Image (cartoon, rainbow, N blue to C red; front, top):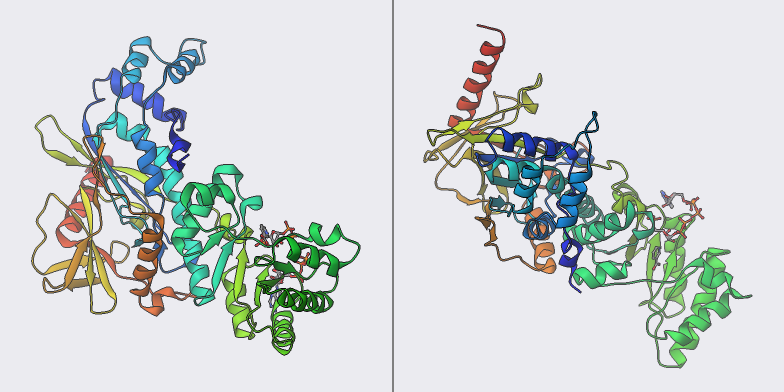
Length: 491
Ligand SMILES: Nc1ncnc2c1ncn2[C@@H]1O[C@H](COP(=O)(O)OP(=O)(O)OP(=O)(O)O)[C@@H](O)[C@H]1O
Ligand SMILES: O=P(O)(O)OC[C@H]1O[C@H](OP(=O)(O)OP(=O)(O)O)[C@H](O)[C@@H]1O
Ligand SMILES: O=C(O)c1cccnc1
């Protein structure tokens, strides 16, 4: 079984009802096929951080590849009633849906790329009815995985190269939360998961120790360790904190010595409570003195990036970090506020009409156009990102303007290396994108983060990476805003 089978049955109803009622209204008004452009983007980094790692594209692709309404879906929609008990959806509209196939153009930023507020992660162009139906599922997929990949990358940053295992399945937001989180966590740099189904679906390494129940099911802790080692002589990590951690470590050492006499080595011990700095230092000393310097120390217990940083500052001797709840639930910020906004609509004359959503706050006003993101590179670090509309040629020396603070401008020379981040994913409803495997995506994350200046990577008050609108696009956006405001106030 391959992970894509998660989307093998029809998930066209995996959307908000208003997408379907709008779809019927577009259809009824003869607008269903009008060509539109939507962008999916977020406005603020999660966790008050300085960067975000985008993830979820592979799932989005699988969803779109399978996008169709099954006869069962149509029957369900046909059964829905309005407030006057009349059928909500017309029979002819349901017939239209039954024959609907996905025909859009999709461009996206590859998974594992570092991204910033207001940059479109996905651009969907096609019949407005189709684009509209996809808003909710695309946001569901991309928001969550991007959030978790970013959390994972922060943990990896804090752990400074130590191994991290994802232990979160039992605390995840439901079964798909657990699977998606395991996948996204791996993209963010986590080395392994305890979730076997995620291991099987995504080809992520699986790892585990044992639970307290194993120790508790024996009259003596040492007998529990010995019995486990008998069954897994080369694959044992003993959980040493069931009764008294320091005594538990002594017993683990005794069993490790017996194991060595039989030609096998204990892999490690796990600490799951108490003062992890003190206990890991004591544990390391005891293991080293017993001639067991290779036995590693794994710690778990409500860990997050701040605790890892603190434990490292305290000199903790922890080699591997087991992280569950705080990772898979993105505990301190359980949702990324990604949005999906209409940016252009093709008029009857064939020209694009730019569209935007007004807001009291300038930063919340969406950007119109057929947007692309261009990243400029220095010798070591990324320099800046430019958001521009593909309709207009970019001048040789381009100026970018920060839409949140128009006094922040920067000119980007044509001599700099650059790359356009959005790449073609679907053309006329067919996949044209070669999906990288998960290990390649994970390597991309690591490589991308290494190109961020350390001031952007720090957790406390990170520096703002420069992202701006290309000057022409900025001016056009301002003109549209003024035009709408004048119209609305009758001036
Ligand atoms: N040296 C340390 N510095 C800062 N925080 C620590 C340190 N050691 C452990 N912690 C964290 O303190 C929190 C409380 O741990 P502690 O083991 O005292 O309580 P607990 O979680 O209630 O224990 P148990 O798992 O036995 O119920 C955990 O999040 C743990 O990761
Ligand atoms: O702490 P997390 O980061 O979520 O990691 C997963 C936790 O799950 C297990 O605990 P268990 O379910 O036995 O409960 P516990 O928290 O009481 O130890 C394990 O011993 C970890 O402590
Ligand atoms: O294998 C482990 O040690 C493990 C797995 C899930 C949750 N906590 C610990």
